[in-house]
Length: 113
Length: 109
Image (cartoon, rainbow over the protein chains, first blue to last red):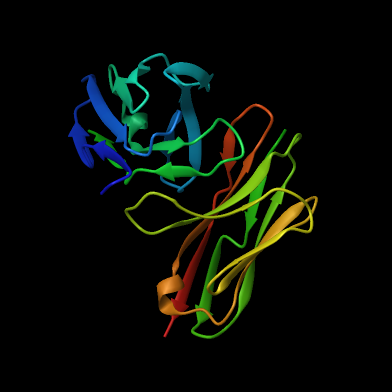
């Protein structure tokens, strides 16, 4: 039974399109995250939500908009996709905001052509 | 600027050849240091959490240690299935989990 699941696993789209990535966790965690992993494998946090409230918003273009309809879901919507948005996006969750390990989804490989 | 640096970038080992990975950090207000393993095409998988200098954690052939400035991940008598990228991350006062660039370990039979 998958703890953190994200869909789709692969996403290929053209520049200028709008796309969404969905994430769900069944661990009962309060905190969820979106990370971006670039071609050099460097993981960088984008957003963090705690109990549906945005607590971390890194310097991410406002074309990226996270939405948390409930504690178990954190979706990522991206408008006007650009070539530089190509990366692997990971959703994660943790029991609390600090001092607890995060559990990651399998990732969504986004390719913008 | 706060940062997490991992070395070496890549490590090629013969099966049974023990080695260590390094994670040095220059962050303020360290609330925890985490080690993760990432296999190709998958998300990071949690291994250890270390909270204070002198702390050690072990799991099978892996042992993580922490000092005030760095952490080491020791791999004892590695097997090919230990091949992966090992990521170090630190949790700071601002609740962010900041990752290093990782060390890719390849263990040959």
